[in-house]
Image (tube, rainbow, N blue to C red):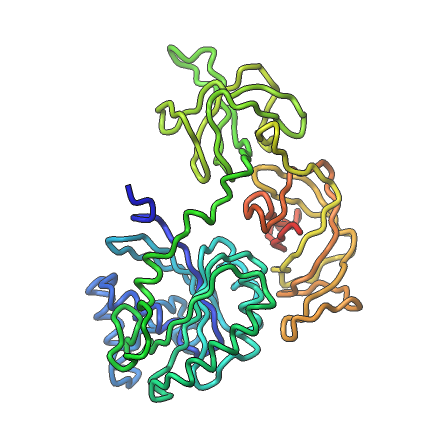
Length: 418
């Protein structure tokens, strides 16, 4: 069976204000026939009222009233669409600097990022900022869409100049796969259908690129990590002695008879069975939700982690993380927060701010230690009990965490373990 078929691909869009992100998504949805008739009619009416010549495709994604009125994207808009080859979830993220946190939120689960560049302006500060965030979040695939090619007469030379500019930028970042497509979101060139105006471009249009992007190999199949969510004790006939540990596999592959270690206790055992959807299975891998039974009776509860004995994560209390501060209020020095890491909830304290990233120049600033909204910085935290962690670049699930303010219950920061 073709594993890429019907797979879910999550992608995020990023670009400066007015680079046409919402128009591009509108064009993708419109040309791939993923919009209901009544939505099309509503948008046609609004476009007419605003005096646009044709249909304003951006209105398909700008869901908040403020966004529609100001013509900008403020919050992350999620859109779902499907083609015969794949299912997609799009996170349309804002371009403004003051919404950096929204881009981090939208991009944190993405397999791919579409970075829009206005053909007239080339690589600008916003492009650098969004590319840096994409590489920080370890997004494996970047598709650079050079938009508004219609405004530069579909000039191949201009496209090649921008490709060269972006290659200089991406060479300094940890990005595995970068592809370049010249498009016009407004006119529909190379979005769903091939462009007749750019015969010089030999690659595929954007939708075909998204449909055929190979993402199976992005999952970590080496480091087996199973954070336990709950313990199952069914009180029914035939299951009186059943004790299953349920949760979602973060990475790696588990099979019956594997020798495992339970962390943080360090007890060892063997897997006797794995169940998924009430069927017994011979192999389980990320991101499946399963229940496992073990050979020995071990005291295991939510927040513990089952791993292969010969491949274990680090158990640490002092951790260095890159965080994006999400809250309106600045971080208080040495304040206590709750930390959520996989299924494990602990108390934590920010011990030290090591440096901040200047999001415009991407330089490190060692003198400014105050954490304000949208700041991205490297900090040292200390937790009350050890966390079972991997570096974020190896494992996006066991390498990420969030900080929560105990008094307001707000998520104040998202972090990646360095």
